[in-house]
Length: 398
Image 1 (cartoon, rainbow, N blue to C red):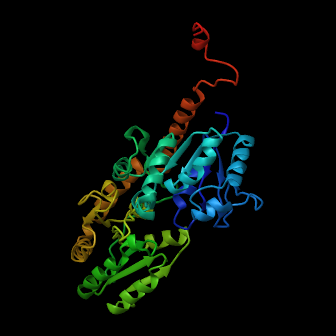
Image 2: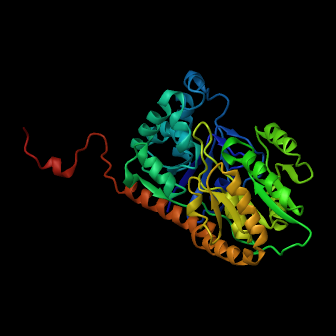
Image 3: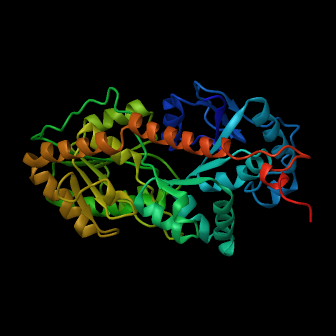
């Protein structure tokens, strides 16, 4: 199909948004071009990333709204680029970015698809005294379609005022190419539990450390490796110190994707203790949890957001309630003692990932949605200026 799809996000990209990069790289039937206000990571992307020139002033509107609304100058620049590059559809990643790019898409008469991921649904609506919720309702009325990464998120979007027929669940895909299925082998000297997460409130890392303290008191062979960095690092370091767990808990900081895979290769159990943050922020479904299951690790996670749609309790892992340190510790001890069940759980997890979260399959789903939206938009009747519809021309004059 002629034309291309503009992939839009104000900041392209943070270290934790690799799923969006994977999506763009995996597109096959639709050419992609990225529009961003700022390019954060200086990676060599295999697709063009366009940012407005400095002469396209951000203006007072963007300054007053802290970048949530687009200035007229930047909007005009986008409209011209959309026209020159034959952009037929705008795909905004995160509803907050959809709000920003909706002005340009509407002015250029290009349909918009918005993919929601987490904080844009769970935290943003409560910001600015409820203004975030009103901004989302306006966005819902203007876009062609919204996607959610889980049924839990889909229901939350509908509760915010989006018409149900405008919301589809499209699950995040991970690249299984070269992802060898490698269930862990019990080690008589050490059992390593791994967690890959940004150090921020919704990840629940302090609860994991507190729970691991109980595990370490019973099992001298237990080790916890936490991969990631973030604003809570000092608090987490204090938590490790308070529980006297230095030497038992390893904080690696942020690692490259290949380094993360090496950590998973040496782990026996994966833990994802996500919680609802004080400001309402929640996960979508953590991609790192999918990666661990694809690799062959039995997992422990919380009944949080869309996670129960990924992990089947007692089949591919163990689910516990949020902030329940005792249950989290018990789950870790149970899995450590039941190493004979690791491979069975790992097989169930891998099978589910292959069925529901394979990148190739999920990319085909989103590209089918592109085709659907483009067909609807292209079939609309366009009336040139000065002409009337055929049915109106046959009507007698009043």
